[in-house]
Amino acid sequence: MNKVSVCFVCLGNICRSPTAEAVMLRMVDEAGLNGRVVVDSAGTGNWHIGEAPDERAQRAGKQRGYDLAPLRARQIEQEDFAAFDLIVAMDDANVTALHQVAPAGERDKIRLLMEFAPNAEDRVVTDPYFGGAAGFESVLDQCEAACAGLLAALRPQLVD
Image (cartoon, rainbow, N blue to C red):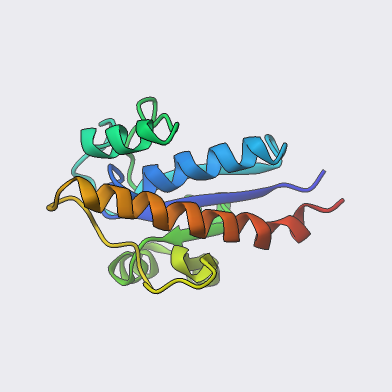
């Protein structure tokens, strides 16, 4: 049985990347691909290690049926590049930080999430941390569109 592993990455792992993780987990479950697509998230920074996602992200997610509460922030580690098939960043600053941590032979695994969003107007997932509730709704919209595209892109790799 073929498996694919994906790690979503943002700055602190309390807003965007756990939202993407929760969205992707539900899509994987709904597609009947549990155990075939491994999903995780991490941050490039270490400020929030061990913390639950931002309350605003949890609230916005809950309104759409996503449970972010069990997730905990962690920092990306060099070992993650060997453990995951794809390292999916939320913005260009995350890509730059990931390139600084990634072993040279693993940098091709780094992609932007919005590359997978069909008809996306935005190239990156904007950080909602310093804004209001609408920013967290936008993150959900972007993650839902991009994760659907990502799952579609992964399907050929899951064929036995």
